Length: 127
Image (tube, rainbow, N blue to C red; front, side):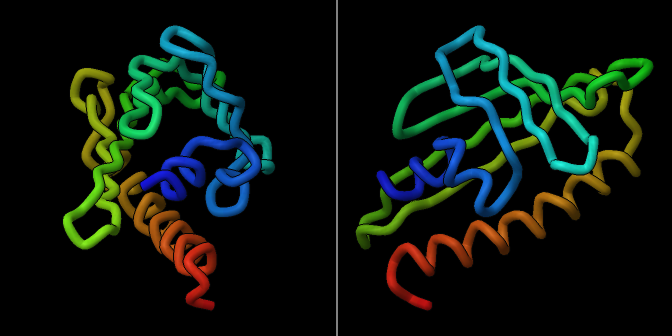
């Protein structure tokens, strides 16, 4: 779980599988995601339990009207010594987003999870 947490939260590691991010500096701190192609997410850290849980708001920079959702990551140790990673990206209806927008994000997250898994395998010495 410690390795998983590092790869989910340390900016240099997050950039290896996802995007450039700002360091987490506690609840209420700004959190920015830069995909490197001009696409930026502006957010605010809503929950921070080091080693276990990170939640931040998600809003595309300059999006009009703004549609703010919530991304929550959690990491739990499993009995086998591994880790269970959970991602929840919700608040779509409250943000005024449609089902197509939600489904598009789900597809992108699925691709990022593959990259995350590959990096975790590499860290574990798998490849």
